[in-house]
Length: 129
Image 1 (tube, rainbow, N blue to C red):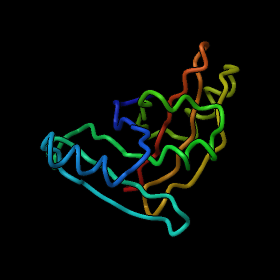
Image 2 (cartoon, rainbow, N blue to C red; image 1 turned 60 degrees about the vertical axis):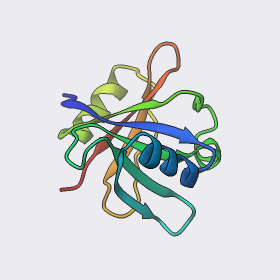
Image 3 (cartoon, helix red, strand yellow; image 1 turned 180 degrees about the horizontal axis):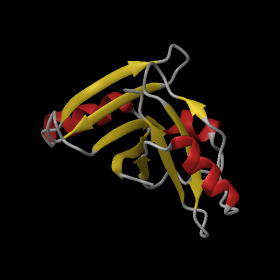
């Protein structure tokens, strides 16, 4: 049901500084940058414009407020799926801890998170086409 690792979410204290580091020092490219008007900025970077896996630079303080139990010291994996609702239901039915479904800014799609047995959280994104 999971088709690939789509994005890695990196939680940073200063998104602008992080963009500068990854683009100016590491040579990544900004693939997209959007703001939902309520403080959530979505900044996607990758080594090339057509890379299959990218990094999302998330505001650590904002994410901590939205998801208080989330470990923000390490990046999180975000999986993509074409069967979003089915995967959500399957994980729920298997007594996996799943978060609520959230609509992402702009046309990024819907997302939910789930935890493994050690309370490591992973996200699943249904990308809008």
